[in-house]
Length: 432
Image 1 (cartoon, one colour):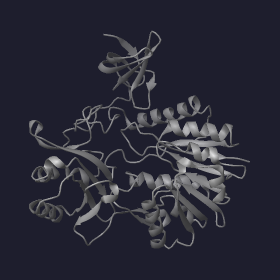
Image 2 (tube, rainbow, N blue to C red):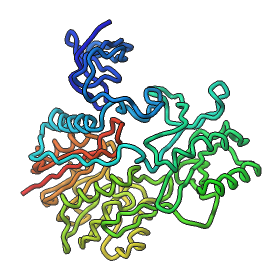
Image 3 (tube, rainbow, N blue to C red):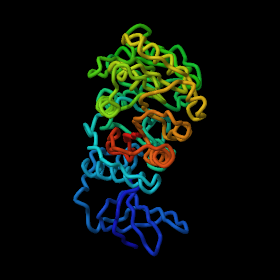
Image 4 (cartoon, rainbow, N blue to C red):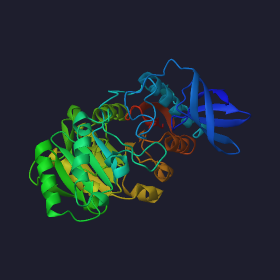
């Protein structure tokens, strides 16, 4: 059985060792450990391997809290102390910036961190009726598999969500459409908990009665989704509170639909918004762009600081939600929204929006390459980039620094998803 010394973790939290010029990625191994491993996939330049035995353990190795760890694919780092997770994610960010973008930040920002457990306000879970595995299964997918993990509790979900898993198994297993219900979403807001059922067949009358009784008993709101995300409709109860989250520092409440994109970690989102605005430093009288603005998570706080803000978003539905949020928070005069596909940005189109003093960019995993390329000679002097993918941030940072005259002043991680390999980060760029 081959052995190796683990040098570091990759972006999927796999341990990296090397043998005879090949890179070996070892699931479950931690930096500094001496491990035995068994390869299950071999390529000319690398191998993928399972951890067989830890001969010398890292001081950062801990006993996972979740009984499903190692089977469920929701978490990849529960065997590592939270402080070690932060250090590993910071290294992933810095390595990506240098090896992909050939840039280093002038300042490494202190990591933003919060509670390691019970932080997820929302989750999308697979559903499958399988008698051979205990009836109805609800959970994340198994590690590197399309199978659904047999999850009975989840310590990273808020308790009010985790506590619904077993009752939901019983409810959904008894529905006439149990085999035509592939997915659910749970979203916990400030005033209610919503459950979205992705249904491929119409509910029977008895099904509807069962859902209403469950909603009353557990104080939840059911939504039905017969097709895509835009087909979601509230089923029961029809009147009552809507989903929302708060940004207390800015005296804001933002309502959202259960399938809208919002950050799953509300506490960390509050701190991230604060950090972003500290870096952006919006001032009354300034004109600021918020690109990939969603329903206004950064747009409205910037406006609350007195600046005029233009939010640009590709989803017309989210633009409509942004308008609604601006009106509800008495900011309609400070904010305007534009529906546009930012992946098709050009210099002429961007110039048509007018001149901006500053800009915030918060793209999806694909990054903002075309937008960065479209920045012209009158580009904003300060740019804050919030990223959920270090590789695309690094690529775009290379464009901003080598082609657009920006300097990477600061960058750091936001531990939005403890115990996962996901690296959220924030960076500050400035130009003369």
